[in-house]
Amino acid sequence: MKYINEIIEGIKSLLSGMLVTLKACFEKPITLQYPDERPEIPLRFRGRLVMPVDIEKNKVRCIACMMCVNICPNKSLSCEKETTPDGKPIPYPKKYEYNLGSCLFCNLCVEICPVQAIIMSDEYELSSYSNNFIMDLLKENYQISGNKGKLFKNKLKEV
Ligand code: SF4
Ligand code: SF4
Image (tube, rainbow, N blue to C red):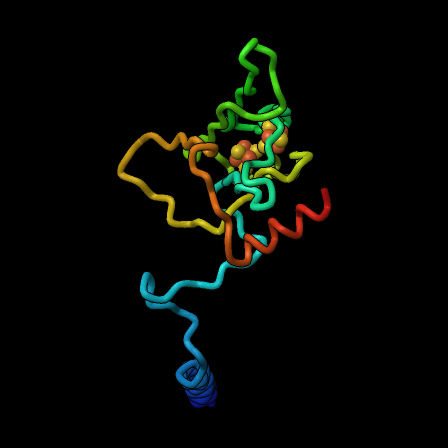
């Protein structure tokens, strides 16, 4: 009798497993044919850091306050202040470098920035043949668009 019960239990468990497989056959696939198909990036996604150009001002918003540089736990940021011809520092960056290779994507720099000058973008294809991941964010002249662009615009309203 014990033997027959075990066979019945075995058949039940086999059928329940097949039922799960059968259900999955009729569900919408969640896999994408990457790179032809691209995922929709959630707003909270943290891609690499960018310093977008503020369209209204036609320049970046950074005031070279160094708060992001000081808070970065991995020393991935460096910033140099712009100066007047007679050498006086002005609140604008002359150089702003970001080391993608050591960034932890922690978002602390974005959170601390008092003028919302930087944002984690939706860029996720970050592999490279080069071993130099230092990027000059000022030179990029980054034009932010899409959902992250809308998020950036909304953040500016908070400043
Ligand atoms: S996201 Fe974090 S680790 Fe990356 S640059 Fe900003 S503070 Fe540094
Ligand atoms: S990005 Fe923001 S926090 Fe960093 S130096 Fe510029 S203004 Fe300051």
